[in-house]
Structures are given as structure tokens and as C-alpha cells.
Image (cartoon, rainbow, N blue to C red; front, side):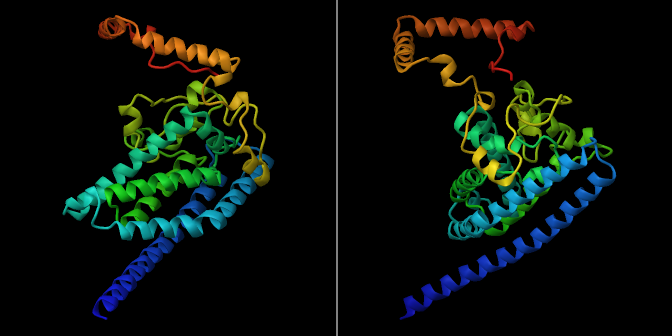
Length: 336
């Protein structure tokens, strides 16, 4: 009887904690709504780029429609599930060995931001992820509502990755709510069609609108840059930062601009929207694919392969020290 009463008390306590976190989430939602309205007013009064009213209205309707759809389909399940998971794993993760609450909060935020950077970069590298992520890039006029132009499958993937982080790191529910609010605020900020004094100075620390605009360029060599969600440190650290003015915003060869078309767009892949060169470019048939794979395995197993690779690496390092490393780019990608 005592054990049953104790388990009921524990269950009630976790539900109450979950309710407090939801209340904090509700307060954060109101603040974010006010911020969204403020960004919208600034865009209307002093826009960074002039956008045709018809094109802007189309973008607002499509993005808000997708946001409402995602909220109805996903938020009622994903957010409560993450909060319940956070409470269940409280006291069990890696960060719970840190007794300083401020240190734990900072490390939680940095870890989530780095995780989102890695996931964002993966969405541009792999065709299966780019197929879904291109819905976000499909907006031809960048504005604050573009922050919510996300396919529901991408939300599923993001929340799944966050769930792993919550379990491994032991991020508490309240910290999770605060992190989400900060990330959403900065996502709205760097998509907003605004400019402000000190923007380039702040770009040394955070992703600002002038840094994120190039990420929405139609050109592959431009939009494969500036992946950061909040901090620009990761792009500087991993060599993906670019300070450029994009020639054109959007995705080449894609014209889905309404709710139904955007939902379908996340399930279709065209040659112009491929994240890389595409398998079809390399392999004309299954036989060619198998032949190429056999050649790769043979070259790996060939005698002296390690020595040749070692010598090649030493040569690249020597040229890099001589300032001639432009002949050996880290990776090559097909430009649209």
C-alpha cells in the first residue's frame, strides 16, 4: 500500500512538473508572438529588400498555413513528449554531474545549438534529407514567416534528434523550454527582412539576417554556408562561414507556393534540387554501380594504398603551409 502511494505521488509530481513546464512554454509562446509581430512591423516599415506585395502575401499565406498544419499535426504530440522525456531522464544524463545550474544551462544550450548545426549541414549533404529541407528554402522572398516554413517530416527528424540529446545529456524540462524559445527567437530574427546597426559586429558571435540571407541563395556554392541556428562560432570553426550578398533567393526549378504543394514538395526530388551530384550522374545502371564499388574495394585492398595516401596527405599539408591549398579544396559540389 505504501509503495503504491509513493508511486502515485511520484507520478503526480511529474505531471505537476510537466504542467509547470507547459505553463512556462505558454509564457514563452506569448513572448515569441510579440517578437514575431515586432519583426513583422519592422519589415513593413523599413524592409531590407523591396518585395512585391503580391509575392509577399503569397509567402505569408503559405508559411502561416504550413505553421498551423504542423502545429495541429505535430505540436500536440512532439512537444509534450519531449517534456515528459526530459522529466523522465532528469538526473540521469551526462550534464547532471555538473552541480552549477548556470553552467548546466549554458552547456545544454551550446550542445543543442551544435547539434542543430550538424543536423542542418546534413540536410544539405544528403539527398534524402535535402528533399524535405528544400521546402524551407523554397520561399522566393525571405521574411520572418519563412522561419516557420518547415515540412512536418523535418520537424519529426529534429525532435527525434533532440530526444536523443535529452536522454544522453539529461536536459531538464525547463531548460528545454528556454532553449527552444531562444532558438525560435533567433530563427525569426535571421529570417526577417530587416537590417539594423551593429549587425555585422554581432555576426562575429550570432547568426544575423545579413549572414543568413546567403544561406537561402539559389546557388549551391552559396547556400551550403552559414548553417548555424544561433551561434556563428560553429561556421567559423568548421569553415562554412560566408559573408556574401546572394544573387537570388529560393530554389531553382521549384515553384510550390501553397500549402498542399509544399507538403507534396517534401516527398519529391528533382535533379535541380539534388543535394549533391546525384547517384544517377555517377551510375547509369546497377552493373556500373557494382563495377565501381568493386573497383573501390580493390583499390583499398591494393598493396601500398596506405603509403600512397600518406604521401598524398603530406603533400597537401606542405602545399597548405605554402599557401597553395586552393588547388586541393576540401570538397567539390555541383553548382546549380
